Every structure is written in structure tokens, then in C-alpha cells.
Image: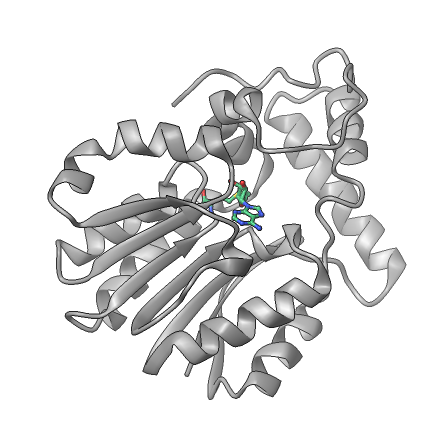
Length: 241
Ligand SMILES: C[S@@+](CC[C@H](N)C(=O)[O-])C[C@H]1O[C@@H](n2cnc3c(N)ncnc32)[C@H](O)[C@@H]1O
């Protein structure tokens, strides 16, 4: 585990929108663990489903890999059966992964690319993981990326998608957000830290509803959608081609 997240201890001092810069990279493990209910379970589910669905000799993608937590689950599951391609457009995240995973990079089990996933090539994939990342793309980019993923998957291939969501009713969204903020408070974040981070994410992390995600996947042609996990306003789906 890296350093403790104290970025918003004094409020959003820089006044800048949230970004995955060096400062965030250094505390990212602590930040996501204390902010996303069920995050560690998501990683275990990715490992389990990857084991079940990997097709030898295909590619496996981790899009928006951050510090490679999902990549690590994929490495554990696959033991070299497939090549893993992990992509992030944050320079500091990808540099950190290059150090952390140097052994697996040398053996050719994984390759880290510093790239905008909107421009990445996805081919011959049996598994694509996009764990809490689509929410940072514009709505147009989401549709294009999802289509590219669908086209790049082999028949029977799976997409594991985790996202923060909102609900159809504002009342429900506010209720669940309130519980989520209590979850963060119980994990040691102050009211100022919670509100400052929320403000800095305004317009950067844009949620959709569960049904918007399901409709998009259905329209693209995914033959099945399985909800793997749901915690407050965070969920994980598996879509199969
Ligand atoms: C919440 S983190 C993802 C966590 C990670 N998937 C995990 O399982 O631990 C979001 C990541 O998406 C990356 N990201 C956001 N937009 C991106 C884009 N257009 N291209 C590539 N990476 C992107 C960010 O740099 C950040 O590292």
C-alpha cells in the first residue's frame, strides 16, 4: 500500500479539477480502497472470471489500469496463457506500473502502454476489463469505445465493466450518495475532504444509470449481461459477446 491519501485534507487548495497526476498516483491505492465500497472484492471477481473465460493465445486487456490492481488479478488468473495489455493515459501511473511489474514485463506476460484508450487497438480479445474508467470518458467516447471493445472480442469473449452510477430518481441518488459519504467518513475522510473531492470531480467523473449501461451493451449486440456485484452506487457487470 502506498502513502495515505491526504490530498483534500485542507480542501481543494489548487482549485483544479481532479486528475490522475503524480500526487494522486502516490496515494491511489489508499484513495480507491477507502472510497469505493467493494473495490477489493471486484479485483477477486475479475481474477475468478478471468480464469473461467480466458481462451489460450488470445489477448486480455485492462483499460485504464492505474497502478495495475486489475492487471495483477489477471496475471494471477492467467499464468501466461494469454498476453495482457494494460493501458492508461496517466504518465505517472504507467511509469509506476513499469517498475512494479518489471518481472512480468520481462517475461512478456504483460505490456503497459501509455495511451488514450479511445485510440487503442483492441483485437483478438477473450477478456476486456474496464474497472471504474468509462465514467471518465465523454458519452460519445464511451459509445465508440464500447463498440470497439465489442468488435475486438472473440465470440464468447467477455467485458467486465465496473462503474459508479446514479439512479433514475434524484431522491434515491441523494439517499445512496449520503450513505456513500458515511462509508468514506467511516474510512477516515473528513467532511471537508469528502466535499472537496466531490467538487473537484464535478464534470470529470460523470455517472450514468445502470439501465444506460445495459441498453448500450444490448444495442451493441452483447448476448448476455450478468450483474456480478453491486455496492451502494457502484456496480460490476459482465457482458458476453
Ligand atoms: C479509477 S482509476 C481505474 C482503477 C483501475 N482500473 C483499478 O482497477 O484499480 C481510472 C484510471 O483511468 C485512467 N483513464 C481515464 N481516462 C483515460 C483515457 N481516456 N485513456 C486511458 N486511461 C484513462 C486514469 O488515468 C486512471 O488511472
